[in-house]
Length: 325
Image 1 (cartoon, rainbow, N blue to C red):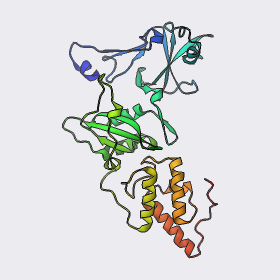
Image 2 (cartoon, rainbow, N blue to C red; image 1 turned 30 degrees about the vertical axis):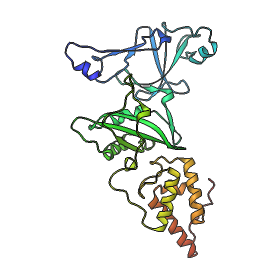
Image 3 (cartoon, one colour; image 1 turned 135 degrees about the vertical axis):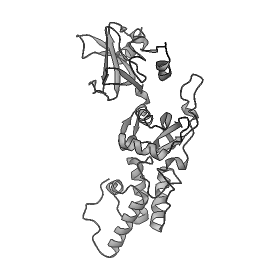
């Protein structure tokens, strides 16, 4: 929509952002200011702060929560002192006694002084111990030339296993190769922010209000977790045992022996469950560090068999101390 408004002769689009707590209009930016959608910059006599969880300013390009202050700020909520104290907090950047409003919106400063809206604080999720903003991943996915629209959500189709899933819609005349999108993201994002599955759809489901209908997004199939090419199945008895343990813990009956446990949605708690399975099956100690170093079925099975053989021959399998995890 932003591009259509910007490219239509004689038409200007202007985006006004703001909560009711700050006279409704707080930030503003137009299609003549930016090639991409923006919520702009603060209006006159208004200050915007992008802060981390400790109320410290974050650098340009880094996501943080938006706080606003200035002459347009309300005094609080009528007869609701608790909520007022929670949302109208002391302004460490203003005069003594000044207040700023915590919007709950996630934004980031751009080098040109404009603000990009990324989503809500309550949309943030924890994946493998890291706090993740799906909107940031969606922005990265949208950079792929074959992707016209994208949505990234957290799914828990298997109880206890939270996974990032990307839903992709191709541009006109293009065909999306999920492996290509995965490779691009791997070069731009930390490993824990790369989705575990990529689902290609003809269109994203929308509500009657035109917003993403998350409940209508389909669960990913087994093929959507595959990085590229056909899956290699287990070849030997040892690989079959490890493959079975991976599948049971992750809730994925179909997976390849070369796929990464953590990329498929595994985390530290699931890793401990996996280690318990394998310790019983191979009658030996197994550390979390062993899995971290060998996160695929093929690599871990080879390690376990090699260690068992050396132990049978009376060789010292490892000089390390017993596992403490």
